[in-house]
Image: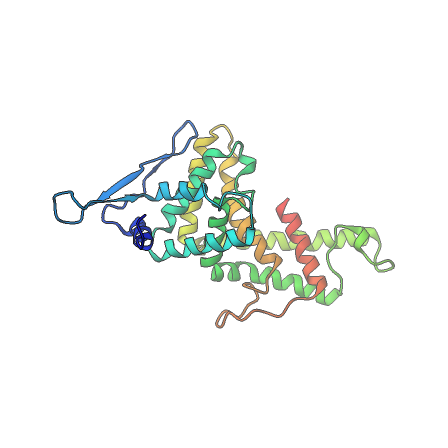
Length: 283
């Protein structure tokens, strides 16, 4: 790019008159996309036509840069967040994330590795987007379960525990601790899954579109694996959105919905109980 053209060219990536965001997912498992599109300056002579890069190619470029390399994870998260904000502003976030997700799916060797590595470009950008737009959905879905955990722990003054070595001596027997933990964790997880199911229609529409499109791509990539398409929702919505907000509920779930004021930190017992819920739900 020439001097001073960086901002204009990046903007044109999302707003050119002949903007394209089609992305073909081939059966061979390798990513391909229309590479360029031309925007006429209006003169009709073709003399000042400018070449714009399409969203799939921009996604490919992102995956080849520092977002995909090892390095400072906090810096990469910040960069991913800013790119996502820019794409949201220009209303092209869904095709961009779809293209990044398609490329991730094309190069993952097996379904178990989908959206697992939190330092990968696709995971960084999908996670950043979900966190930016899902505050009200996350709060409504998780608040009853998080409050129930805090109330149970406050009443008993005892956390849930699956590691008996962490239990102070003389409080409860191993059998009592195991039974108590199993009872409460089963109840909380059942309530949480029911809440996810009942509020599915309130999940941001763009997230549902992304899950649908990426699940279809996974199904084409591994047609013989019937469980693979479900991994997209599990890894994206549950692993990257639900579990982090259960682990740190003060930021979103328990925050003031009007002012966004962070809730005071919950006590140690409640935090440990939430971690146990996360471990069981993750498994």
